[in-house]
Amino acid sequence: MKPIHIRAVLLAIACSIGFISPPVFAQSESSNRNDWASETIMLPPGFAPEFPTGVEELRFPPGWRNPDSENFWSYAIVLRLDEGEPSIDRLTQLTRQYYTGLMAAFGVGREPDGLPNAVDVQLKQTEQGSYLGTMHLVDGFATKKHITVNLKIHSLAQSNSTSVLKFRVSPQDDDHTIWESLQSAIEEMINDQPIQHFAHFPHGEWRAGIRNGSQQRDVWSWGPSRRSLTSVTTNSKNTSESIFGSFRMIYDNPQRDDLSVIALDGPELIQTGTVKINTEGNFRFDMELLYDVEEIEWAIISKRAISSTWVFSNPTNYVNSWIEDMGEPVEPGSVAWPYFNHPERTPRPASANEPPEDILYLNAFLPLLESQWETEFSCTSFEWIPYNEAILMRTIDTHIGLLIEEAIFYPNPITKQIHAVSVHSSGAVDEGFVNIDGEAIIIRSSRDTRDGSSKIERRFKIQDASEFQIKSWSIEGSKRTLLTESVHKPINKEP
Image (tube, rainbow, N blue to C red; front, side):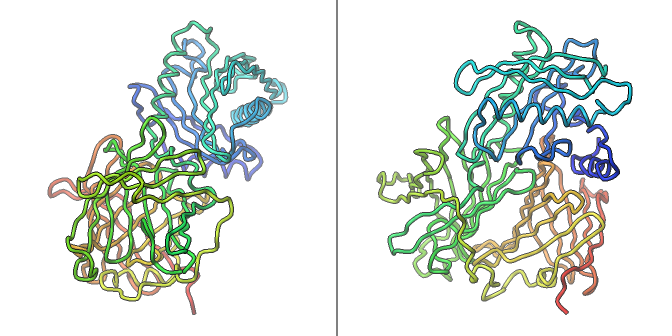
């Protein structure tokens, strides 16, 4: 099975020539339910371009496309939408919209003698956020005949601008065991994506008042396939002063139970650690602060453990409070900052776009910052992370316009070794170190996926001003296996 972005490319090509080929649903990735298949799709799907943006996850039991199976037309869906919780009329519209496009993609309504593509959705609300209903349509998956399926839907508002919809779909009666299995699949999808608890953060900006009168502003952005988040912190004085970092990355490492966090507070101070989400939806950060004691006059130790909580009174307001410092409790409320969400974003100050004053460790990357770099299928950019000697690399699949890799490179303020963290749209995460060998940048990492970990080496080699090359290998003992090789040409290069 090809990766999701390749399927999307094929779908886009089909649209451009006047018809849509059927999307290939899953059966590729293993899920926590043994032989069930899974799929993750960025929204809107190609077959319903008017659908809201967001992420769709699906779980399919064996036999879901086999008319002779008890599991025929049975599957579970979690939709994470960039839209507030829908009314029953809006939910009906979205369901009809989705399945009309999906069945058209499978050929329903295209045959002169075939049945028309008509989707009838009937829903009733049983309690707040819960709906039961039926959907009558022509089965495009297998039979091309009329079918009636039952719907069980739950909606949940995460904020005024985000919501989660949980669909269970099956033609089976209410007492069939498939419904319990589909509910278990829903719970797994919810639990497998802890980073989705941050789904309301990329909307607007989060502001905090500081005692000196300035105003801190955090602006969040999604990473590849919404498996990570980054935030850039600025304030009204246009300086690097902050109370919790100038740049932050939160990402889901598939081999760890917690979300990983990296916060860069400037070249002399970084934070690394984890964040946990409790049952109330609040966050606990357990971080280690690393200081360059030679550069920070007030730093008397090189490492310091800090724990803090983000406690929400509602989806647009939280308080960040320290709760432990070096293992000792902090008096409640003594070190705390309230944050409020504002729908408008403040333009980033000019100082946030300037390179660092001193470049001590990342000189080898300088030629890569001079332009964007393209292949036939992608565009890669390198830029300075504000107020840090650190670099952000982003690669976009130019055929579908989606971010497929985001990486950061930064020196450790104590060891001075260059760290590298890369998040891929597949869910893989690379964590490792950078070495410079002449004109080559060598990144040796552990690549973590749901299936396990492996050793990866990537080599960025700048041939000359006209191109640079990326090669990657898997490493097993002394054996090296070439995985990818690509040549990148500069675009938007200054004359």
